[in-house]
Each structure stands twice: as C-alpha cells, then as structure tokens.
Image (cartoon, rainbow, N blue to C red):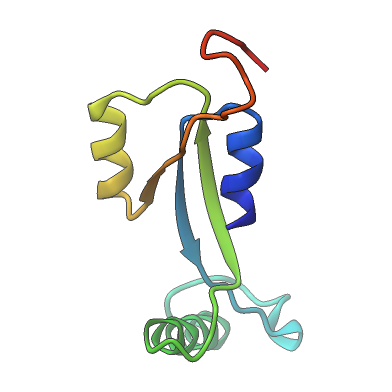
Length: 103
C-alpha cells in the first residue's frame, strides 16, 4: 500500500485505518435530518448498500480514517482503536535511516 511506503519513509512505526462509505443525494440535501425523514432513510439505505457490496468484494470503500504513529502506540490505544473498528498495521523500520534518527 502506498500509504505504508510513505509512512515508512517518514520513519513512522504504526498506522490504523478504518474504511467507511458515505452517500449523498443533492435533491434531498436541504431537508431536515431526523430518523423519520425520507432523506435520512435514503442516506442510510445508500450506505448500507455500499457496505454490503464492499464486504462482498464488489466495491471498494469510498473514504477512510487514518491514524499514524511516530512512536509505538500503547496497548491501551491499540485496544481502543480495534474496538472502534480500526485495523492496525505495523510498519517496518526505514532501512535508510539510523535507528536513532528523527524525521
């Protein structure tokens, strides 16, 4: 993944990623957001449809949240991120930097 290569070059140790989808219909955009509104139901149905297609491998996620760590995160932080649905990726050390170097 290109993000991993970039963060490795910058000497980061770990990153966490949580992909997600969003859905917007311009003609419903000006309406009130409540759980009973047509706009909310259309939005939720659009997101659910995309999520199902992503889980089946037929569609890629449209958006994502990324948290990157310059130093090794604590076990508490990793557990909290996993609980929130993030996938944790440990990065290799940058072989072109001395181990005590900071970027």
